[in-house]
Image (cartoon, rainbow over all chains, first blue to last red; front, side, top):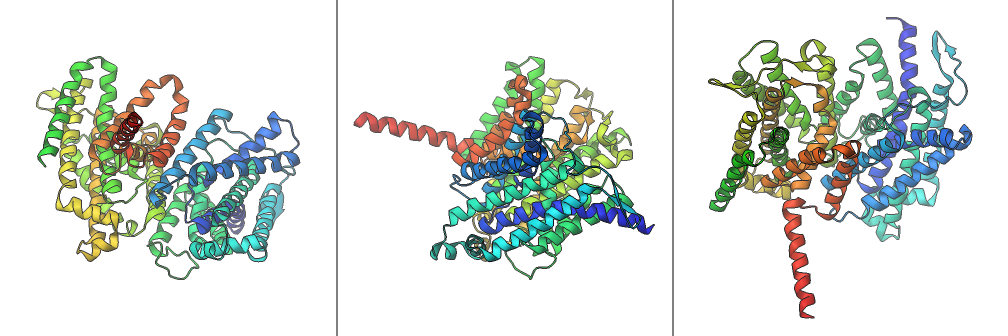
Length: 293
Length: 319
């Protein structure tokens, strides 16, 4: 086992992990505001990549313009999803919510398949393809973009949740929705906000990862599930714990794929998911709580 | 109970007479699949409808049944009638062991954990190429035989599969009306209340999970022997969702609802051949619309709708 090999796997794992982290934080934001696990989360990641492609190739926009347009388009999709699927639901039991978000994700995936076909598409990297050497390992400029954008989003997220009225209101909803309503917070609006923020974050994750992994109508399922895994490791926190969860998952997966077997790469994430759910359902860093078990 | 037996009797007669109506070859083949899917939907419905516990990994149990039967008979030349119960026992044991930790979880967490389990099983089907043939599948699985009869035609398979399906239907109807069925419904409504009344809820949940897995495994074995070929693609996450859709569309907790859901979702794609790529959208849309507007499924929603229409008609007549 060589050191530079491990370094290489860890570095590439970190950037995939950053993607999982962004998706996981999106999961947690909705969960905390509404108590819903949004099974359609991964589809917004897919939409991010696919909309970028649409604006780039069909509408011939330059990359710097296509990306914000794609984020806006995916966010509108998230908003519509909340309005048309989540809010009209009368019997909002957990099982019904699971079923409706699964239904929504299939529908979105199906519509994407019809609009863009089943092919895998590539998006050009943000700044070239020349590898950068770091202590015997090499990374691509896109890896740096992913890490930098993730850091920025985590910081913006933190500022929003702790230093703005609307962010604080959202945290109040997470603690106790009823009490938040009683002090005059419009809970419905916070639910809508949570869907907007998390679909925007999901689409950003989808856009920045697309130049590395390509994109297709069905990339959302796996990415969404891995993001959920990250959120579980982080104890459904919408902050740093989930980010660490995502990075950890990315690195473990990359090491596992490189050193053990690439065929079982996806299984690693789910084995971790099951272990965490069985042994520490409150997440790696959380205090014991009986909500989930 | 008498009414239930009567209902079952009518259902059984309809099922046994159906081949006389549809003697055309292709539809018979589809009806065989309706039988297999009915079994699977009833199995999942016992868990979801009666006990209120979701599973998004049932395609995994179905696949395990199919692969264990397939491998034992095709590779090791076992008698299918021995392989089938062995598969059911192995799958049941596995479900029983995993049931304790997994059913401690609730709602969304249970959904994710069972989903994860299903995906792990799916990956194993794909990766253990020496055993399962990997993504290209396992072929050469023998048909079932009984005395001198080999179940190799659609009509023969129809009676074979539906024989099993009718047994499962009868069993499920009985279970729902038994002490266990009542205990399950109590767990569904309030686990705490059920516990207070002396129901061992955690054991009961694991037992029903196991039972449901065993039924799925049985359906898997039968699937393998009628198809004589299995590939991982039939046992993925999408199929778990399809099963869930069948149960929800038919009606949670209703045995005949499961049949309706299974029949609808199996026949629909056959009639929508032309719109092949649209079926995924139709599943998603149906799932959402049902939960929003007919949460009781077809078996409860359609009579309700008629009642509403009828009453409205009457009222406007008075005015």
